[in-house]
Image 1 (tube, rainbow, N blue to C red):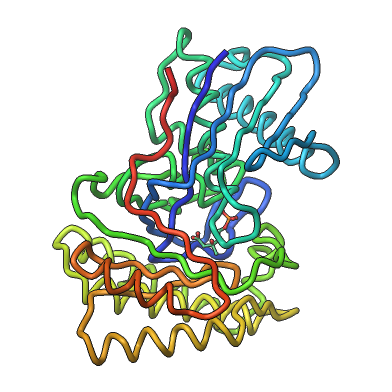
Image 2 (image 1 turned 90 degrees about the vertical axis):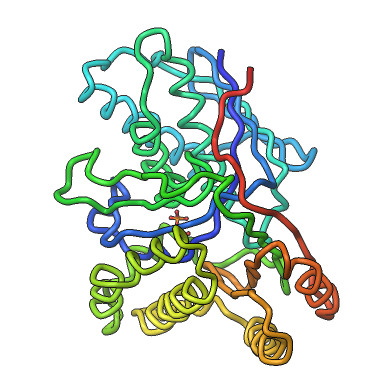
Length: 334
Ligand code: PMV
């Protein structure tokens, strides 16, 4: 039996589009900050058949249908990957999985990143007597469930490197700086709690249909990712703000021009972004905005700006607010 705990992350350079969809191998690198909360806890054990019990903020449900299929696929691929490391039989035939999630549903905090990084860490803990996996190896297992989950395996600031080729281990995460490097906050403004209509798995498959996809990949590959890494290492907030806002808006442009188009941002999102820009003009606050596949606005700021950003967020009418900061990533629970 093994138990792990993990959290979502918020990307500064977004992952959108795969080179190989079945293995979730991204076209380009991405970069994020692992969050301190909300957390997910997963316990896995040997079983006769795959069985998943899940509780989200106290609400119990048994995972079935396409959700169960996704887990089955991840476990089969994890076995395939462990086979390439000479450990084809390290994992038991079947697993029982117990998921305890503290992530409020449909708020724009990536629960799949937390869940699959947590599952990967628990799998590594279960087979630890046979072999101790490196964090990079654990990130490969996490990526098989959700690309962005690879980044939550580690704490602090983490890049997912797209690598080359189509082998199962082609893309992996690397830590750029740990969680003690720079205290940044993520103050999350949630305008709507509707479930999104098109999930990211389907979205990735549409990315390349946008006429702007190739230019975005070129921008990330030739400058944005590296400039963002440099900004983090130098704690240059202004640079981080420019790069991450440019990339977030660029990703949404690609989404909105894909075929069929995907529109995740709402009027409320645009309103909040406009207000943040105005706040920045008047108060010169180190705060940046970024949005994933939904209308939720993440306001990432330094410790010195946190109080004012918190007050700004609370003043947004009809919005739910959630607060987190940079965190340590997926870990084993003793
Ligand atoms: O890991 P996925 O397949 O849920 O994709 C995540 C996509 C974004 O959240 C939109 C961007 C990112 O890099 O987190």
